[in-house]
Length: 467
Image (tube, rainbow, N blue to C red):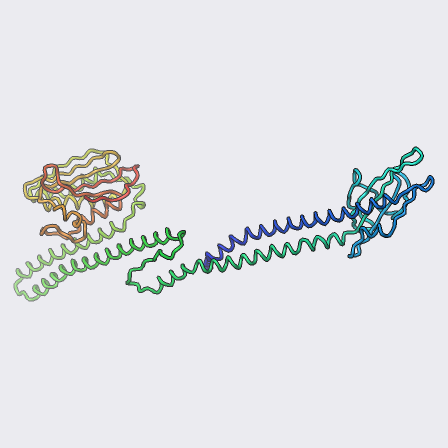
């Protein structure tokens, strides 16, 4: 298995700095070399032209013959301390050579003066040719003077001009890299202090990052991290409270079951044992129901709306099945179920969870409604929202307690129950990006529980509101 390489922010920032600076140094070095070469070429060409003009001035008539007297001082004009060889040639245009090197290449540049590159005995030279008209006795002859020189001094001048500039550029880049690396180390030190501070804090304590010394660019990240910590802390607190409440709720039926078991062991009459076993059976059913509700609540809390995408649920069928399942319980209390369903009521979600939520709401209404009253279930769709209302004619829930009834194990009255029904329904509706609210029916008596779910094809609602 390959070990994953750690990504260093400092190294990546330096890399992003090195790449453009390297490109800059290459471009700057190339431009500096080109400027140095151009300067050396200009100086060399100027020296060659000066020598050619002096040589052209030394050409004169001697009777009917042209004579070129090239003095050593003329050669010294283009001579160099580096020992460059100097070549020259004086000739009549289209005629014989008057003076100079016989193997000097003929001029190849157009115009006068004209510079060109050539070779003498395989040695590269830089040359210039200059044409001077000579007049005598009514005739005119053009004399071509060519002067060339090897390029040792020219190359040395390029190096003397280019290398210091290149060293200056590279030195500046190296100094900038050192300073930037030092600056990154100093500027990233607050992050190291933050990491050390977080690592050194005890786990049970409240861990938060202080944004006072954090750079402005990192403050949104730190704020988001602190917000995540707040969510995690709230969830952990809720989980701890839920576990404590669940343990307390399960302990009670277990204790009762243990006491009933001990009582049954002490009974000698079969009839007493049977009665005790029947009571134990009821205690066991209550505990199984409680555990099932706890599992349903945990499943609802862990549910994710994105996992339900694509699963179409017909809430009209879910409502009808929930009413059918609880019709017997309503009949036992002489409660009339009034049902109004206006399809289509198609939502996206989990049919199992939505059925459990609706069943809990209807079961609560039947449980708390007085004998001989009505429980109304109304399901309809409007403006892209499927709304289901469950109304009873009981005592209702005081407005100051309507927030707390959604807490697990909270009961607003002394009626028998686990106090998980509304909590389960709320979590299931939340998982489906729906809303749940409590209110008072239009006649002012009882309780109205309303859940609203986005119809299939509608955008999920942003948040859950509880009235």
